[in-house]
Length: 483
Image (cartoon, rainbow, N blue to C red; front, side, top):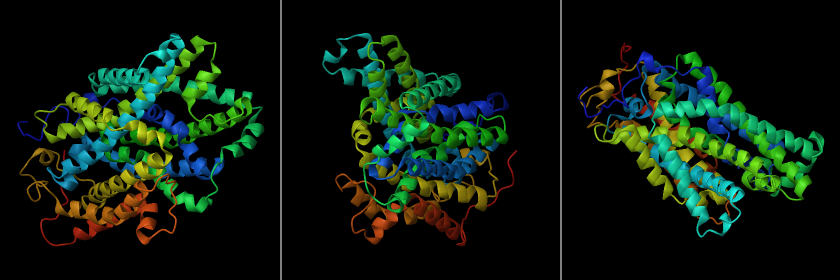
């Protein structure tokens, strides 16, 4: 195809490419969910005032909720074999798709930076175990940050199949490492009862649960809301709808809940063993394996693999396709991956990760509000307006049914605007409040809207889009099913 909207990376997948089984899809989620940020996310909730079971319940419920838009958007990927930036052309237009794709891509770049920073810290500890003088090397943390970045860049250049291979083979290793850590926690902590009685010492704040629940739930939905948009990037390779539905339903909520539980239980055990709570698994493993360099090296390799598996799937695949969508004839998947890596490294990831307020209640809730609105428009368009029918050929044409007005579907843009603008004042207040922990003092109406951010933007934008499609004019038509 000669269209400027087409290249081999954005083309629909053929039968020979649809090789991902239920295991591959589940392994994808296991590889993405078992990561240091999942291990520590409960710590942010408990630091704000939740107890262990409230934190775990919030995390579990958030991931069950986000699974719904995940499965709804995944359907188009498996049915038509197209990646997210091509799928979103149906709702936003062949040019307007770049707005949605770049919004998603920039969030992924920020996440890429955060996970690379954490992976660099693990690599720094690994080198410190091998070489006792490593900590004295000037700029050693920056060196490992760049080194970890370079390792990922090498994997990016292998393409999507390289990511599939990496996820499938590291998933069992990550599960084994998690189980080993949990067994140690219960053994060293004096048993299950002792561990959970000591978990009360992890609760630092005194904010009432229901005051924290909604912003915390929104943050946990926001944790994977990015993937609910670009999940077609992966499900386009699935063997069947059943493979992707079962694989995701098993892989996402169960892994997130289980690994968060590991984080809580093991950290509670550190109170017994060390007399203090150690939430950072890199710090914990370093202390546990003092004098046992071989064990430390194995443990740190597992952590490094966990960071890479998450970053490759969650934060590289999508923006690589998204940047390719800007200029398909000039930017390939691999070039898009390089762009992602460069932006991620200059995004100040250490600041976002080291501040609970910036990380959970500003970063996660803030971008979740924007992407929730985009996701709502996509779902409303595909499932209600179009009844799951797309004209595959027109997705790659400047003069097809998805051209709308100069390539932009004004209904989609207005719907996102209507959904997002009301939460912006609350976001700005949260972002400029030092030490913000999710609860506003004397909240205004707009602060309250921000508390429910993602849920508000999702329902308002989706409803607005459906209403706008009732206006006479060049509204999206329901196509006959493409063959």
